[in-house]
Length: 151
Image (cartoon, rainbow, N blue to C red; front, side, top):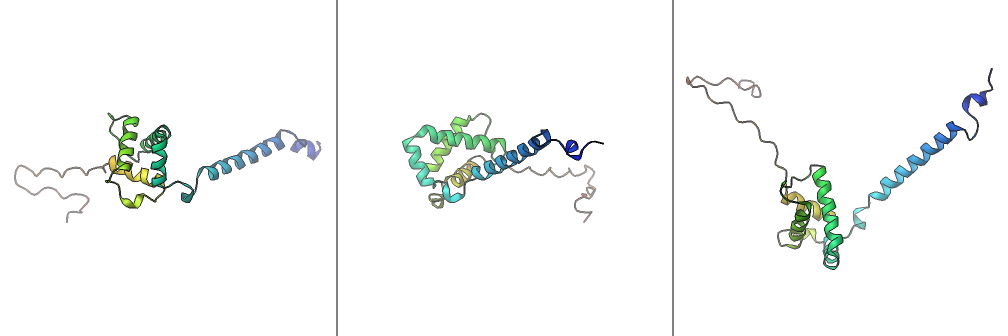
């Protein structure tokens, strides 16, 4: 019969290394999740963001392009197919600088303002219900709809 130590794997063996690697991977994943989600108070306000945009439009437009691309991918906005992401970023920046945006967004975190602008400019229309069935040509009453239960 084999020694119990030999059945579990030697210290420093593959089983132990796998367990250590698994713990390291879990720790790295948790760290990445917590580090990637900054609290709202750490994000600059829209006013600060727009001042940064005035100094460096390249970084500003890149952030907005990234935001629009992510919102498109997640189907949070419905941007027209004939509008490029770059054109959309320019339009969003114009909206953020305009009088059309609510004043309350000035001191809000800039990502709130990006969401408000993008969802205002490119809303996704809800699915429209199907039209009612046409009335019969002979003048008799149409059959009851299953959703109303004949009432």
